[in-house]
Image 1 (tube, protein in one colour):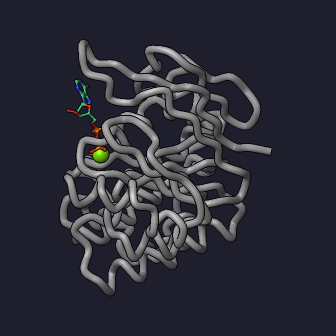
Image 2: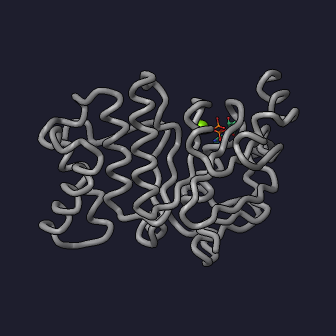
Length: 236
Ligand code: ADP
Ligand code: MG
């Protein structure tokens, strides 16, 4: 059974085709990595999955349901959560406040939202920062907060857009562990990441896009040896 499925998804901006007839499928409980050179259409594909954009043509299915044209807040309530490439928490609010706001996706009770938030912060090893102002966090902790906010909505599917960008190697290793813990909790993950060793280590399957078009897919070790992929990266 698939958690997310793209059927011939195309997204055009005026004359530019950012995503071109893309087919992909993520099995429940899997980690699917999406890679490709800068401007390949990765974030646009995420935006099509999470309802930020409605595809120009094609269909998106989430947990068996056609969700094409659904809005982000509807999808969030159904269990599809995402982070954005550009991190923007309410910088002047505390870590706990930001996470609690996200937890209201599933409850109207303040106490319940706060208790969900505290649990998630604990699992993200961020509880010791709960009373800190979000804007004062290190980059690594800000990325953790971004994931914590997504987790507080209790997702079935988590979309993570380059949450490892700007992290030091040891922080990347810690983040790989965070992803694995999330997956062990039964959450399916769709991930965009530029740091190759991380995406190779994490992904069950990889999809590679270039100029919006899928050029390769398969196990990380197969994709890494695919000539089309090597050419796309060397050619820029
Ligand atoms: P990636 O995430 O792979 O780096 P993007 O999905 O951000 O790539 O962008 C793919 C292409 O679509 C780029 O050429 C980008 O300039 C263009 N693009 C993305 N979003 C918009 C938009 N809202 N309006 C017009 N062009 C866009
Ligand atoms: Mg992007």
